[in-house]
Image 1 (cartoon, rainbow, N blue to C red):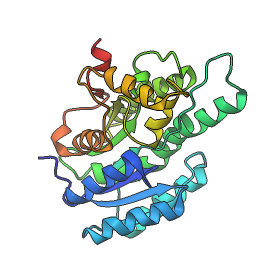
Image 2: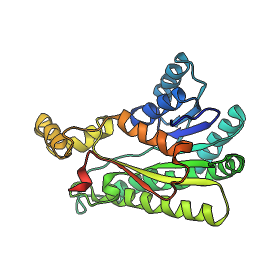
Image 3: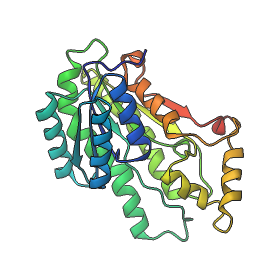
Image 4: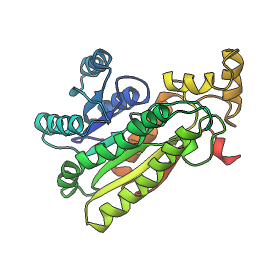
Length: 263
């Protein structure tokens, strides 16, 4: 189940956190994996770990807000591995400010990474994904990282929620456009709850800057399942959506939130 033998995957923002956990699972599932990030040393360290585990991996510097970086990254991946089957638009940033407190700079930063990065990544990867998808029974795959606040509102991070809502609907539109054009490319989004990563720590801090321990307990209790999510929880969902086992899913939203949005 969820095997990726013979497939090539590219994951943005994968030097750490969910992206790095996804890269490890994909290597274990048989994929050759490239990761892109602006954290060069940490990204190279992640790749060294993948190679030590027997994986075939590549690190490329990638600022997702720059179209030229994306073009160079996809070119490097296809030159090294001969094609591309899976794109994971994972890179993202979090800013927890209210509408009145947010600045134009905050908005531009959020849009640059969370929206422009997904658009540029999808646009740059489509030709390679289309080529490999044409020869695959289940096609190739795009997985976009959204959030639970891409489905419901956020009282603490409304601008972040706005960008993640954009990712949700862009994913559906990508799926429909690819279908209309006859491309064998599936596109789905994934929606984590609060995850125990560095970005998740920012979301927890926003709940109670003066008592992080209490804020962490509150965040865990907000998930009916009774705990925070882990990077591995989300990576397993990404692996499923990228695999042929999700071959009849496109334009869908996979929610991994410990029951948060069921309330």
